Length: 200
Image (cartoon, rainbow, N blue to C red; front, side):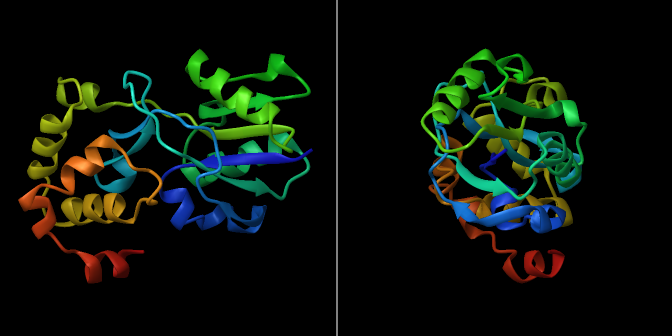
């Protein structure tokens, strides 16, 4: 069993406790194109904005792939869930051998991953499948202006963590909101590099 782990955010620059359970390095930009954006507010990241597959958006971003070293698919899922601090049922799954095992919050994402998997050398693919929760936390639908306004409400360690996460996100995760921030004077004036590195 060859299982592909699909990544698009911090997993790529910080495997953390998943590191012993992968084989080889990241194949950057080689995964399925998915609608990824910074539209999740994460308690794990001090309430900063983090990347999530957001099916309400109409753009695509490249994703990356690394191989699990596990031969057992259930164990590969458990490894990823442990890294993401999420229940195992929030790990998306598509399997070539058993389509009935498919698990994802979006049929569109399932189709995209399945199409990519059929053209790959992998037997299964898994990914973090958490919800975009910006609206749940703020009462507003995520867009550039609201995302920017939310970031400006963060202070101290929360703002530093938000800056770190967005700044360190992989280049291929070229979301519209990230491009928007790259043109914003306030955002570009921030620099928490030393503080962020110490927080790793």
